[in-house]
Length: 453
Image 1 (tube, rainbow, N blue to C red):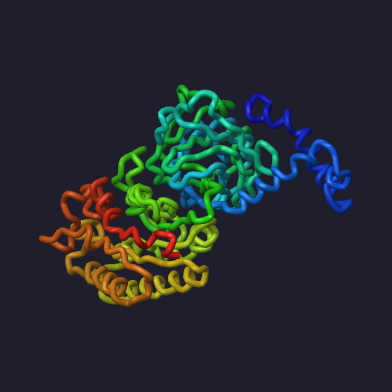
Image 2 (cartoon, rainbow, N blue to C red):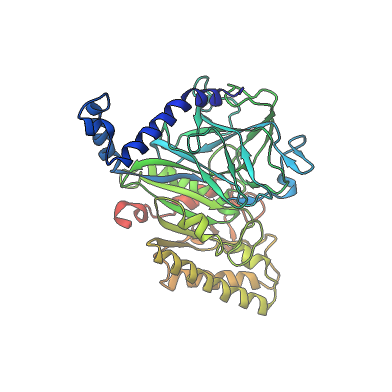
């Protein structure tokens, strides 16, 4: 095997198998063999192991980074030759960076094949420190790469529609650090239906051949998408927790800086990190451009993805709902259509709150931001009337545990149907980095302390 990670795994396989066999044999006879004999090389190690296990009992797994899986559209597929007829990423090294929120002493990766048209065979995976600690870095710090395993093996085949969670890796991660994840796919995925997150705003690299632990992927092609990665967990103190952002392109960061990590969820996490009582809260961005609450579009509708993107994420104690603009904007600009979508959207919010409360989560609703002058605006102001009705319900119904008034933070005082000019990226719908900071600054931090559970 050429890959460094594979060679490291091969040299330890015999020891791992022997250990497993010893454990199984001991269990079959009612205890550890060393314990039954009262001697042996493992006998003296037992108290230390027990102490370590007790220490780990005060920790748990919490997601520190997530990416909403989507079916990759033709325009977001890897460039040639990495996309071929019926196959993607054959004999390819794929290097991606992720900016985590919480820190921990161990981590686990999630690899998703949620929308794959065939099984996803990943030959080997490594985690490393990116050059300069930067998101979107092509190179890694030499010698920092560590092999990731799945059930003790160097690779994994992810079935259609499934995800696989890697083995815990002792790789200390600091809060706010960026990690590099590199995959090698020897045969590639034998389908052009693949899983990705197009709106990564983060540069990824691909290069033919096995370059898993190469310090630099010189000559690699690059795209601003993530492929296959859906989450990173860390083993964190028991008090640490996470909040999920269920959102659309405004949370996904259209208009933010490529490789700048300045979407509003990123900026919210930066604020939380500055205070001791909220520093232990991860912010998990489960948003996608074009996403809707009621109907599929760019990604499954929000109601259908609650189980996967919110409830299945470890360590989550709260949910921020920041969607609905696309539902109003894609419904016909007629009185009947807008009345219907407004009523349906409010019912959907109720369902989200109901289901999240059943899981023990608190739910915070964000008001819908202005879109006057954008592609969603209509001359009769019907969609604006719907936005006002939805926002009035969010503010006054009492259904949400708290309200994040993004509308108030973003609207132009002189023209409340429009975004403040200094926050507008230019399309009158999305924000520039200053605008995303304004949204983050408007969120009450008290909602995310330990006492807010």
